[in-house]
Structures are given as C-alpha cells and as structure tokens.
Image 1 (tube, rainbow, N blue to C red):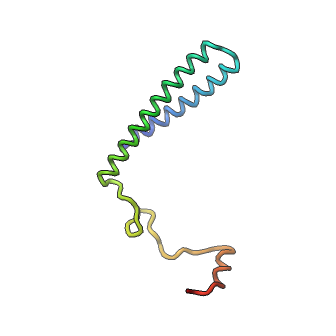
Image 2 (image 1 turned 135 degrees about the horizontal axis):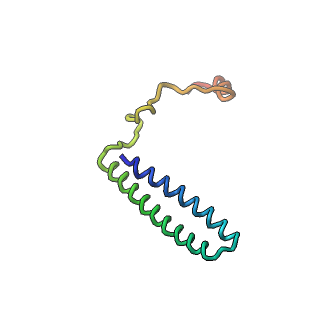
Image 3 (image 1 turned 45 degrees about the horizontal axis):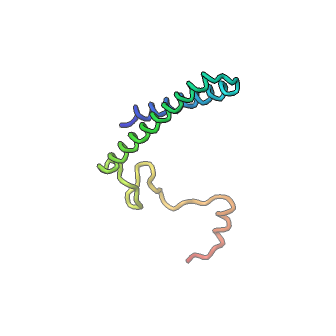
Amino acid sequence: MLSFEWRELEVLCDRLSDLRHRYAAAHRAKHGGLVDGLKGDITKLRRQREQLVQHIAARLGAAAGEGRYPPETADRRAPGRQDTGPSRQTGASAESAEHLPLL
C-alpha cells in the first residue's frame, strides 16, 4: 500500500528536525553563512514534505473512493472493533448506576 511513502515522510520529518537543530546552533554561534545555507535546505525540505503529504492524501482519497476502505457504521464495523455486548462499568460510576431506576 503506502508503506514506502509513509517511511519516506518519516525520514523527511527526521531530517527536517535535524536541520532545525543545526540551524538553531548556527544561529546561536552567529555563523551567517551556515545559517543562510541551512535556511535554504529547510525551505527545500519543507516543500518536499508538503508535496509528499499531498501525494499520500491523494492516494488515500483514491483508495477510499474505490471502496477499499468502507466507512464504519453501527451495522458494519472494522474487524477488531466489534462490540462484544453491553459495556461494563467499574468503580464509583458502576455503584451509582446500580441505584438508578430502569426506564
């Protein structure tokens, strides 16, 4: 599915975080040339990240439009999210619920 794209997004975000830390350190050290270079790299990487997010969103939208991921409803829930019966209350809320009249 989209595992490659998600991994690429994770790598881009990690790299962007690293560049931001390097930028902050260069700014503190008042290293103007490095600050300018890192600023350009950050801008380029942010643009790449935004394009990848748009690509992932388009692919997810297309997959949802094809019906591969049906929306959850009360009658049809995703596997693993099936209701197993009435919910059980514990603690103080269960004790106070015992004294409520049944309607």
